[in-house]
Length: 318
Image 1: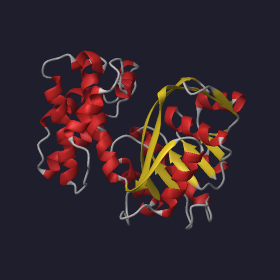
Image 2: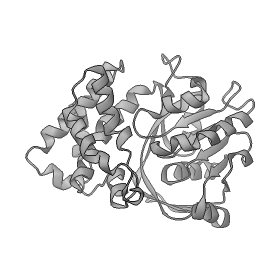
Image 3: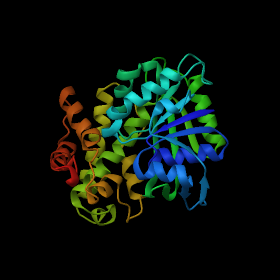
Image 4: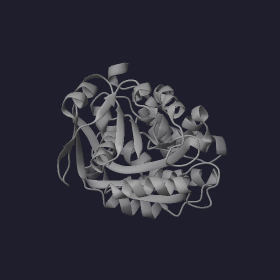
């Protein structure tokens, strides 16, 4: 199949490299030193599962990548708007893709629950395949992506239209990812998995970043568990108010949090320490705003949002 990776950083770069190694045609959109390194040396993955390097086609202009079957959107939430013109270019160039229909599918892998609607507003709901991923990766140097741990899980599903069953195109993409050795799951309605991940990620990222500490020391505090459980419950209550049925409960989120290694630092905390922008608006902020609009109290999540919001643009952009 023909893939385009829009956002060739830790997430997009890792999955793109795995697809290249599995024999698929993959074009990478990148820029700056990362683009130069990809063209000169290929893309290297450093992973506990084994290191490897693949030659890749990398461009700065989507128009040079030609028609594709699937666009994987791997940028951070705050960069989605800036790359949508490139996504539209890729879709316009696509004809009779392997997924069927007349346009390629765009797989959104952003954190939170906002990305499918934002992308759909620009390219149409019919093009969007919602997704969420569980992986810890980052660019360690231009052209090199390092994975921490061995988890690489992707959940895919429709976010609009018929969400009563797994669609053919979602199943096709899932099967391709699985054949590349990735842990991929196809679901009928992706909205529940998006909210279930948010119920863990928004509190985890919020507490650790606000406290400037990994989760281990926080778990030793006398009130943390109560506050974390309430934060997770707030997210799930907002999801229910939006009409999204989840099977995850706050206790499930707590159990997952308890299993996280003590030294884990959420990506938001890593970005904060590096002076980079934070996804505050799309994690804590979306819960607080949606809760307020729906009349669902979110005192813990709203507090975390208020505390972190002044740092949303990062130290380098103040």
